[in-house]
Image (tube, rainbow, N blue to C red):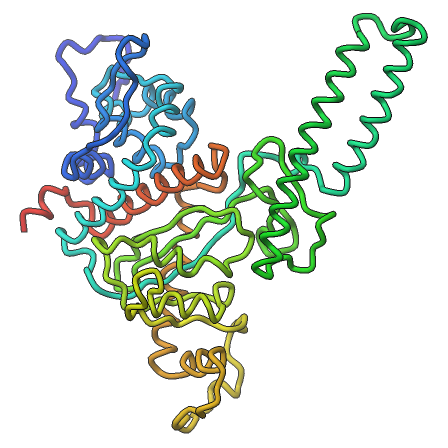
Length: 439
């Protein structure tokens, strides 16, 4: 067979001929068309930038995140070289990285609406039940900042004292010798200004660290840390130093939360990003992130990191809705051991009626040992834990590209949407969306 790259194509190319019928890009485009795109902000006319349809921009971002391309420059480059990306863009459109970045940062509410609508679409395809359980979990995701750009409360105080001493010396030099003795190109006023600006930045950082420490004290989340050891990052001040991996090292990170369907689809039904290093305050918010339009939640399973008496009560009584009955929570009260001991294999007699004087924690522990409790809690390990594995190892999303808590929440909504599209495409067995909705 001869490979001829020299002869020009004499007829227009239909790029659909270059993509398999079951390709993910077809599902993404059809899904965005089906849900309808409203409320998206685009660049204003007169700015000099080209105008791109929001449907195209949303499809481009979803497909890019689903295929492991997250940076705006990387996405822009792929519109020139990737057939599927060129198909999304109609062949000759190539959104500039700055346009992509602006579109991504300015459409938080619209992305969340699109996330919900895709799940409603899953109802229509009969791939998601309207009533059922969820499992919740969190995972640390690296911030777009180095931990080496952080300073501790103690060290920041030492630097401020050092800067103050240096300013005094510089003032003295100015008074004594009119700045003589400085290196060529340096001036005392500029050196003083630089140190004073540094002092002001460090002082502001110390105020933030004091707020962080006060909040941790209120929630009992100090984990033995003293104020002196709290850190502030100058690249992304909203990120925090958190334990990562197996807990033996620390990274500048955020905590990404998800709520996952336990009724067979493994779709992400809700989620958000928080600065909190532990999950003691997250159970109620993550359950609340699931729209009632998506799922009437009947049961919630969570690991021990989410447990507190107040958190369980808040979810089960729906305190924010007038103490209405909420979903039943199955939350571990302590870290479980991997594997089963010989004693676990022995058949145990019925537990009988519970004692009347049991604490809430003891009641929860007992509930998890029932047949129903074991069945529901086992679903947590089979659903939410693999989701994070897919996001990090298949999609390749291990670090945010944006900075600041508001912007990383926008990016996390895109990650959740991309995961769901990829998952739905898999649940359909590669069928076109139009075929699935026809039944």
